[in-house]
Amino acid sequence: MSSACLPRRPAVAYLLLVRPMRLLMALLFAVATAAQAQPRLPTNREMHRYDRELDHLEKFCFATNCFSDERFWRESKRVADRAGTGIIHAVLLRGRSWPAGTETGLMFAPLLDLLPRVSASKLLHEYEQSPRASDRLWAHEYLIEFDMSDTKEMVRKLSGSNT
Image (cartoon, rainbow, N blue to C red; front, side):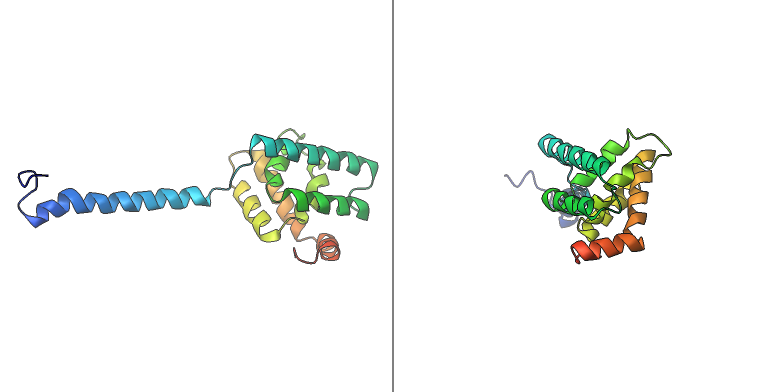
């Protein structure tokens, strides 16, 4: 680079070179931080697997009394352990098709109750801010279920680590 291209005064060099670089670095940092804050959405393959798991639990629920039958809770625990919190996306996506005013989605409450509490709560709180009414409704319902005494008792009985 020739000296003819560079400004002769340091203040001008600062305004032309250093200040824009600082602004660019701050902008890149802000974008990277915001990108990390967003939950990772499941891949199509994961969603397909989650859908199979939910279908399985739904059939199991209809064959038993979902909420009072410990077998259903144990099966929900197995699914929760296999799937992790990513299954919340599939549950809430499925919730968009449930008729309004029904409690259809509560069949998956034991599943969500048995997921790691901190990460599940965080994700559900994010869904409470969703522009979709059904996402907000079901996220709120599941968060309420976390605090129910019978839920806490069953979670404590099955895992002891999510309360």
